[in-house]
Length: 278
Ligand code: SF4
Image (tube, rainbow, N blue to C red; front, top):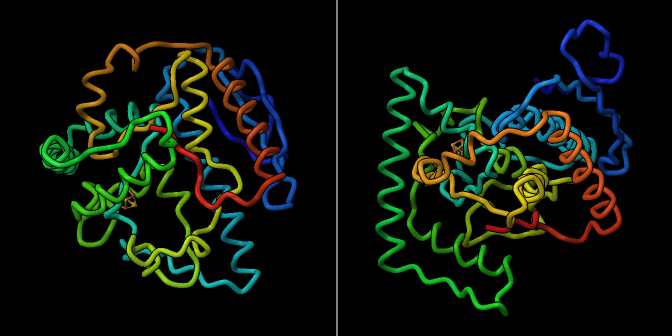
């Protein structure tokens, strides 16, 4: 329904393509052209997730290439799960998509769903007992997220997708995981030792773009969902998951936000962490 194409890959063989949306992004000083072929169909929020994941992976590859060519050491690799005990935010489209993945009637699908439900029970139980967030107007969204992240890290819960230090859903992993890159040592993923100068700022946060796109389409606030709470959250938002828009309208909205963020972030590359709102 929405396919990301490399330059030169576009041909006219896509019978149901309603529109090809082409745009250029400045990726750490490297102008990069993208094209998205969009079908003449209605789309639910979850439908944009594969495209968004693909784009975030491409951006991460460009960033990794640049780091390697600068001689920087990046410790992220298979078997390292240093960042898999922390709060992973999901955008709303990813949350609806995740439910579809977890609903797969396979043994692994059932095991992971159970792990999600077990983790969600612990979080909801602990949250009602000891979590307090300062939601006053003076407390910025970022400070509230930091408070929530610290509280979550204190629970020492592994991600429900993690098994034997491996991500059991690497192909479907959240965009937040794709956008988390550190240099030097994986020890810096430890909340106690984290040094923000070693956290690589992704040139454009696709997670942020999806949050903003959802808010614009639904005329709502920007939201993020804690990964282990995805299933109960979806249960409470079933109607939102079924709502549709023209796929072209959705992609145009996404690309517009992408370009605006790119201009903003190219101008000021000072922020270290993508701005997320819950
Ligand atoms: S989804 Fe995979 S990569 Fe992301 S935190 Fe969970 S186990 Fe780690």
